[in-house]
Image (spheres, rainbow, N blue to C red):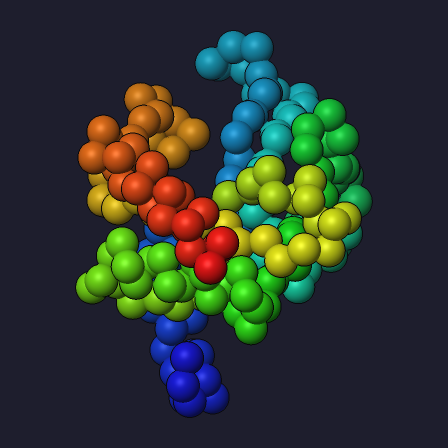
Length: 182
């Protein structure tokens, strides 16, 4: 983005105002499980919450936990990382100055001529973390057209993509493989 000194604060403010883009500019927290109380008319003596953090690149699990503890600021409340799930620092941001990015960019321009190609973050966790040890650039891109109504279905009820998006995926990856061989 040109003139980041000028545009960055405006973009951060705009992205912060929309739940669909908020996680692009900061680490976010979403309570996914809460357990407290035994009856609707009895105050619970304890409570437990599981909070899913989407950690922004440049931060770590450790720094995110430290921030949560700082915000809570109460020694009676225990904050711990549950190791039963997939816990890791965010994947590093991949350079756009590589052969791989140029091939992805070329394929996007061929398959979606009106699209503007610009790097962005993938908010969700992907399997690409398993390839980090190879030190190869990893680009997380899914060539589907998502409507706002589709966002609630990601990892939710009725998770699916349209048949047309499925066809787009096939055509895109077919072209990407051809372009990679040139």
